[in-house]
Amino acid sequence: MRQNFRFSGTGGQGLITAGIILAEAALLDGRLAVQSQSYGPEARGGSSKAEVILSDAPIHYGRVTHPDTLLVMSQEAADKFSGDCDASSLIITDSLFVSDVRAKGARRIDLPITHTAREACGKPLFANIVALGAVVALTRCVTTEALERAVLQRVPKGTEEANRKALAAGYALAEKYEKRAA
Amino acid sequence: MGRVLLLQGNQAVVEGAIAAGVRFYGGYPITPSTEIAEGMAKRLPEVGGKFMQTEDELAGIGTVIGASMGGVKAMTATSGPGFSLKQEMIGLACSAEIPCVIVNVQRVGPATGQPTSPAQGDVMQARWGTHGDHWLIAVSPSSVPECFDLTRRAVALSETYRCPVILLMDEIVGHMRERIELPDSYEHLPVVKRKAPSVPPEEYMAYADTDGSKVPAMAAFGSGYRWHVSGLVHDETGFPKGTPAATKNSQDRLREKLAKNEEDIVKAERYRADDADVVVVAYGGAARTAYDAVDLARGAGIRAGLFRPITIWPFAERAIGELTQKAKCLLVHELNCGQYVREVERAVKGRVPVRLYAKYDNEPATPEQLLAEIRKAAEGIKEGRQ
Image (cartoon, rainbow over all chains, first blue to last red; front, side, top):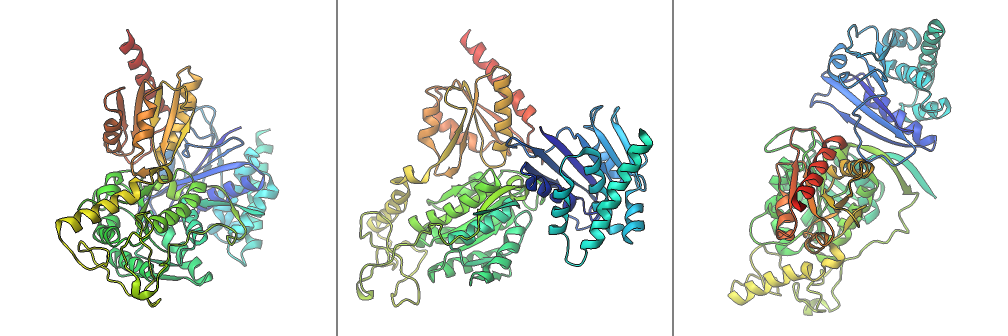
């Protein structure tokens, strides 16, 4: 099975890191992954996107032409990167930054990602890990064991506990949403 | 035992260089190749090597040539703007026969172009960037594992044939991350050693073809052997000699040392190409689209295949010519306005139609876009038959 993810937002939100972590988690699960990115010449700001393809078969073309899951963490990213979604796509937005999405019938879930990062970990910096937790809880694309290992081997020393909390907060966000939806 | 890692192509180049025994890097960082400089700066001190960030790209290739003359395997990396700056000294390395590897992770050009976007506009520059008749090797990887393998191969080829080797990458492969399995230790991996002189220093002639291989033995500076290095046309002593005979001898040997060994140097991959009517010719990052497009075409009942030059220079003239025995059409796909296609046309000599799918808008082609071109090619074959 092939799963296409696109994480998009503003440069500096850590979405390329989130993409790398998801791909590394898939490798830990014994699957294949390709991660690519596009960004402008700026170090911060400007829209940024990371794409991840997970599959059990070899992956050649490394870009996503039709996201199964689209994460949008800025309005500009929502405008720029949602055009190729359709009714089969899942769009997860950060409700703090995104109001309109050209969804074309896609399933849309608005979650207070950055808000939760601030509440649970004290800093909006952890929004990418909260988002990753929510994406994985909603799609079950990698195991939570692999995800936690991938997060912990990628983040700076001394931030492990805060990152664990961020993951848990992401899982909880998704769970809360699913309960409400059920 | 190995390590399974998620690496960028650029990071795999660093590991390949370390594994191949590269112990000097000199260069100036530039997007989208910067991760190579970054990685070499971290890895070289760990293995007793030296990293030097120079004031510009010219000094970068200069230090690489100097290090290589000192007997150390040396590499530099850059992108289009820096590749242009390095050309003069790439010519020196051709003439003086100094082994070195120059990585060019291509971005959109000309000039500053688009630093973070992919293109393959330097494919002819890799062959003809420096002035004068000259012969060198260029290889182009399509995947992260191949970045590791081809970097090792580039080093081995440059040491074996004493010429610069261009590792021609593109932003797609340089920045993409994928699975790679690396050995825990590189110690058991074979490393090519350049041919050392078999005579005492007083009998050493730096450019004498002593064993008929056309590749002279190379003494390291500081080893007690003395030789003269010049970009002027030189004879076997290394000192300038501009007679017609000396000039021709020098050019013949520089050409033949590669031409005689094309079997060893020129490599390509064939994917579902044996019975293909339409053979896509694509290299580097563009080939990744081609595998999927070929599979889509096969699914739609079109006999399509891929011929992927891995060594892009010298050109796979014979292999491309042989494709025309089976194929009814060749479709060249490249991320420029059409450069390599002219070489393909030259090799095909009009035996079958050669089509071009040129893409030069900052984005790689999608498999569907290339499939549409394969369909057109297949329809062209049908119409041609009627």
